[in-house]
Image (cartoon, rainbow, N blue to C red):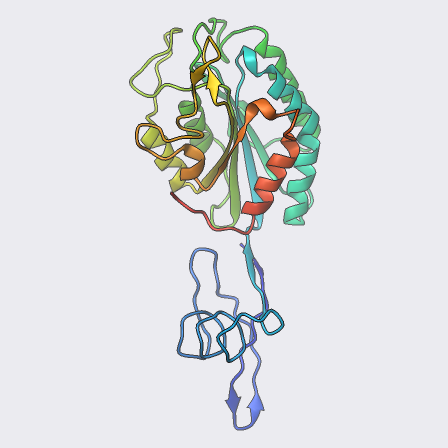
Length: 300
């Protein structure tokens, strides 16, 4: 994890001023080596976190510190059923901006790893979970391929028709969590960008196509939390065959008394219907990644 601080330790010994720099702080635990009796990590005797001797937080006396990730891994988990064609078009158009913004954050040339999982009733981990993309154009090619696929109304791995409205979000999220070659969670911001315009089923239910769901809601959330994967969902309020079925649970609202997936995974949720009109897809993704790059993983 990249350390972005310079900590000054002052101690008066025989009239001499000693200087030091502590490199032991980590994102998920701070090995405090200050010289006072408090536990705030500063060098004064109060508990305000600054380096002066009073109890305020004067910015002119503080040495600000940020503890940020070194790397970013982003996996797109996308519903590729018929109604998702517009989302795939937007991703194809905007992915170059997302690519550049993520790599600017790490300050490492093309260091960000990208992956792709697609789903209807079944799911597919593209490229077997390897991050093979050398540039945004590779992702654009794959988004275009799956955009074309949406017009077929078929599953991702067979020609079986998609004849019902719930799609397999839970298995696809688990496939991304388990199947992508994520880098070390201590040094890597792990993000899933998830998109669907409908609800889901959970185990032991099956879709009309005969595909059985392997995952439960609680198990999916626990798996994402264990791997510190943040989920930013683009989801709908209404869906179903009539377009007026409440599909918020799990995304905008609690599901069976459990927190929505974005809330439970230090993530966020966006209205998919606004993409391309009042909501810029690239801006939403880039702002989310930037906000999380130096933030703790918060579980609700």
